[in-house]
Image (cartoon, rainbow, N blue to C red; front, side, top):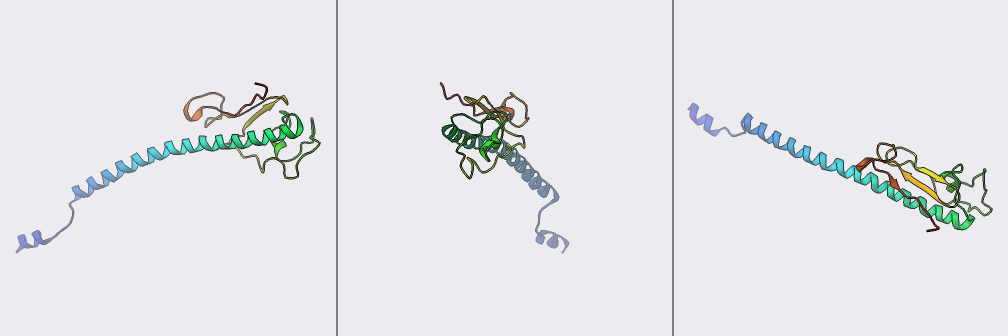
Length: 146
């Protein structure tokens, strides 16, 4: 009678359950590692898109005013008319861009200009100039004379 009862019970053994949990854990690790790389790539793409929007706004500013905002005026000159340095005579009511976001890693974008050329970049994940991979600079500088 006891053998019959044992044969009729169905279920998984502890070892079978442990093997399944181990396999699920390995698969989860692989998925997380792949998503981490995708996040870094998405942040770089976001920074490139931001820089592209800044470049468009800076080019419009240049066309309207004959020069880029100075380093002192910075990127905020694209949101509202600057009050220092060379003040634009014909500044559009809504500005050239809605707001100046931080880069995807929470750092401000770097902008320097002498009025004729500008340097525009993000220093990447580490916030330090130079680097490789996710720490590499994302450059959007311009030289209209060349």
